[in-house]
Length: 280
Length: 297
Image (spheres, rainbow over the protein chains, first blue to last red):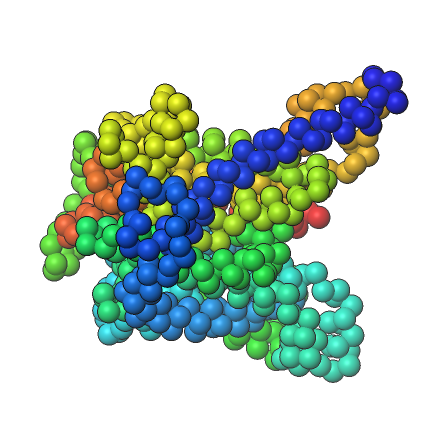
């Protein structure tokens, strides 16, 4: 072992060296953000793939305005789909999580893993019946079918988030309420619901991010006039008509809502990520 | 297990029944239905449920396109899971050193998890522009100007290994998630363990190699399973980065085109059932052991 007097100084130098790999990694992470931002703020006259890395000569909003004009209807579709899907998912998850965490009925230990499995399946394995079902009940192609789909396939993760949360609440509190004569609904309404805020935030953020970013269900279930922004953006990028600078601006618009949520509520976002990996 | 005793027990069941029914129908019922379609003759717009046994699966086995899919998926999984595992671990160890600014780095590395694969694909499509000569741009242009010409790449247009370029974008998107999982693991290792090793004269390298990495084995296994199953489902990122092209085909894209573009419903269903089977081999033990571990606590 090194002499004790050398130890801290040695460690100090080593610690400073750690910033070198951190900086390299940061560059890897920042390059796409840099390109998306500088491209977005350039004027149309400056747009050239050869000068992609240059800073804009002057701040211009041309690209964002063009992208916004092209994407506005799809942003509305996304919002109209995401808000009801997210709220409904969280409410359903709360009820399921409560029942599974607190009322140990026969078979509960079998039902929970069977529900959980639903969040890992490749959705390709349910597409054919899903489309047939949506056609059969007459909501194929529009937003209600997409909302219903997100709510149903969101049940596993939201149930898990709330069940984990309710499991941390001491059984004594529930027992005390029960002894005082509170039934199931009153226990939920007056004891657990007021303590549910963190789980609601996690579930809402998770479902908001997942449904806003979803491409797979949307591309299967919606007609062009009801495309959410991910499908519209992909279509814009795949076409030869829309210039790359406008695609970049569109990408930022599509990413902005979830980035804002991440920046302000990142801690809760990480809780959702951990729950999704069953590691909480 | 207590028996149903009172009205509350019935109410609890009534509350959870709609969800159980929904999952039962939309997950298990629909999978059963897809399984049924996969052994049917159904080709074309009109359903045809006449049984053909395992013919759709058998045809896939000899299908050159499905062989390309298998190869692409193997390369993608290897590069993506390996890369994200390594990078995520390095980031977790670096962020775990109590350095000033660690919150900034952690947030930066994790933020791509908040955005859509479609956004990632659109941006990386231009960064990994394969154009050459006077039309060179994106990362290749940077490499050229820095004299790092050996790094100039055809990216996703390269033969055979083109899919690895997609994996690079996936690593960018998902390594932060790996980092977060490893950080959770690192923070659960008590400082006493580290101190004891240091007192015994272990170098930092030995500490990680012989103590910390073995203690993180369960986390590593989780990471491999979670990333592996994501990798088997890869779809959005390829579509947005490179479009649907045969050279970068994977089962999820083949399933899509067979079913919704080609109306080969039987074949599409068979592909999706194969995807489900492989993912189930990873996920069912994963759920089982995680819940068992939870019950044991």
